[in-house]
Length: 126
Figure 1 (cartoon, helix red, strand yellow):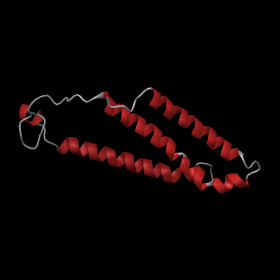
Figure 2 (tube, rainbow, N blue to C red):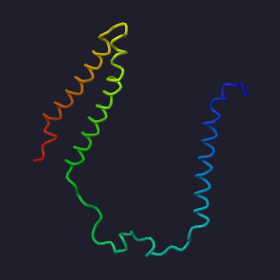
Figure 3 (cartoon, helix red, strand yellow):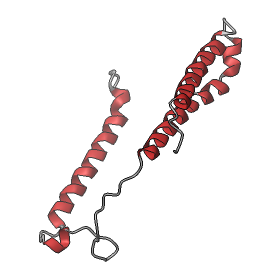
Figure 4 (spheres, rainbow, N blue to C red):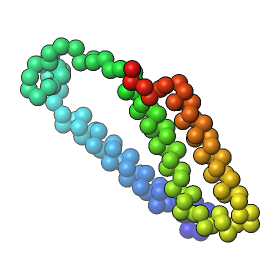
């Protein structure tokens, strides 16, 4: 087993086991599951009570906007962690200021985006 694909064998085995498990589970569920369908069984289940009213409730778009902005800025902040962990590596590199300047540019673009959000008043609730 000295060919170039030998190192991929564990991944292939895991993929086959996973696909086999999924196939067996779906097939057994289809074969052993109940086949009788009625209106009562196809209704939505709400803690044993009959569904009342419309399930679609309208929310203000501000909730989605704030959630999107939170995710956006939160993901950008995640990029600060590897930089902080590897700060000594950047300081000892050939060009000592290269890592600092790159992170400064990243932080500047983040700050410009945040200023844009504030100028557009995206976080105002009124």
